[in-house]
Length: 292
Image (cartoon, rainbow, N blue to C red; front, top):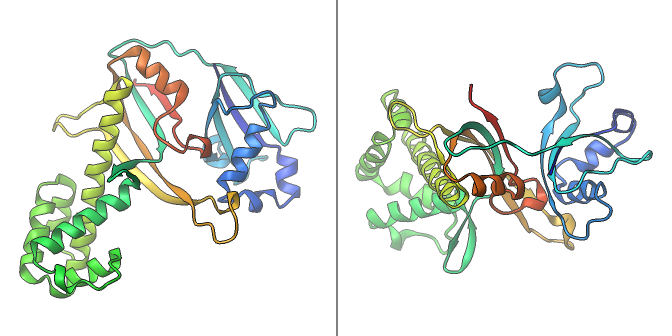
């Protein structure tokens, strides 16, 4: 296996509109990186996109251009006329059961419901809103088009004191949001915090399930809270892949935290083949660093 750092050649990035063309174009990036593996008919690499300045510091030749980290079975080929500069090294991590690592992961978490796959974040919010509407006997007052905004508006307008008390119950059991609750806030703020608390819990369960399958577990702190954070939820359009009006795409979430190996072989497979879906579009690459 190989671990590579790939950058668009500074002279090309500086003198062209390539950065604007690639911005948000995950399908185009996927195809360009695949050009580094001309003999591969099937994709066998994982990658993650970052911003060069954030990774390399304030060097004269570094701007806001993207930088890509790749894990691949074969070594990327950098030709004389290549769009990229490629730095590669052998990637054979020395692993032992029980080792602890800090990690970064950009993933596409999904949940299967009634045979269909759903975005975990959106599904968690929708399920909580539906539950609250049902508990408060407001289902008959929902409009025909039952979007998330309609649920939120109905709850805020007609939920009353029972709704406020229910949000307080939800927030009090979460240490982070219980502290926010003590600072006050409007009812609309409490609803947003409750939705975020629900999303945090659901994403943690998703990550724990991945670990059980792939040979690792989350490390917990002295309060038995997992060392896991999520951020940067984003929707990525794949419209360039299809025709006009194509709204296909996927979401991604960035995870950081600390984990411990429970099964060395399964964990090595996770490092080499990734976690979750949308691996062709920059998701799934698990980056780890030994603790201490």
